[in-house]
Image 1 (cartoon, one colour):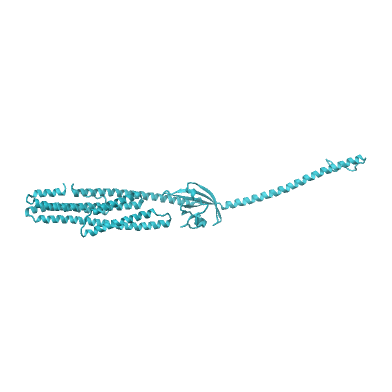
Image 2 (cartoon, rainbow, N blue to C red; image 1 turned 90 degrees about the horizontal axis):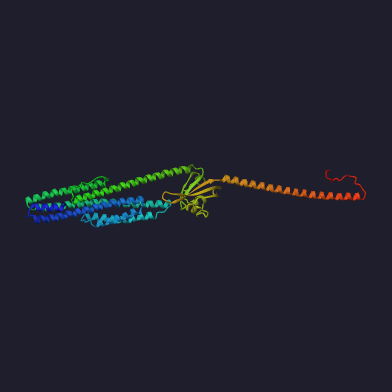
Length: 442
């Protein structure tokens, strides 16, 4: 049975004479109470809306998701509609004005937070500036949200006071009519009002306890009237808040665990990179150096706030021979490079490296092959020297062979001339006094 019917039943029991007067008084009192209760409901919805808006704001700051942004806008508009239903009189008008003003001012602040995140750059300086601006905006949002919470609680308290005042005025009017009827009605109304006030006070205490952080607290419903419905709705709101809080807490825990796992994995990778005998560095698609191990730092020095082409090549723009685009396309690139900064030759291996956020960086390993290249150059020089000596010796041998071949030809001609001369001497009857010196076998 609702409050209005209870009051009507009281009027019927009190008698016929006071029926009209009591009916008017009770109707007026009932309307005042109903309006106060309705305002309490609206204020509770406003309080709930402010709490949910803060939760969604925190969820967006953690994840920066479009879903949270859409929820924030939806809750903001819903809260705006609720505020139009709030009725206030002096001095509540000033408090309500502050709530409406703060509600209007958090919209551009939240929009600035979203816009600041959307246009956030990738360099460390841009990220630092963006995060600093975000902290200031979030701080302003938190201050205004806290002020809204405090003001809405003040309005809820004022609504309760107005309810009590309406009940008091009704009791005063009832006292003016007769001792017996007055006493009966006052007694009943006082009992009823005390019950309502106690339950509203209990409900208000519940809001304070929950506002202090105890989301497990449940308000005693007591009956099925408006206050009971309000208490039930408040308990349901608390249950939803508790569920949202637990889900948020679980997500935060999971995120911390994921961050810790990534940190351990990164530390392990850094330890491996630092223990390597070869140089190694990581660069992103904006040519910003993300990491350099100790070996490469020893060769090229510190790298902070420098592009890769500045750090390795002392250039002001991207190198024409840069292999980054091939690597970011998923290719592994193996090549040699001579550094004019330290007069060393490196065997380079470039490979793509996928980051946790889905972006791709380039990992490049530097193997110092300067001594090997020098040895190869010395070996090449020695080889050319030997080949030159072989060519010169071959030319000398060829000349000797050619000389020996000419001598054999002249010896054959000389033998032939001697034979002819001996034959001519023999034909003339002369005998040579000496053997043929070129005769075979001599």
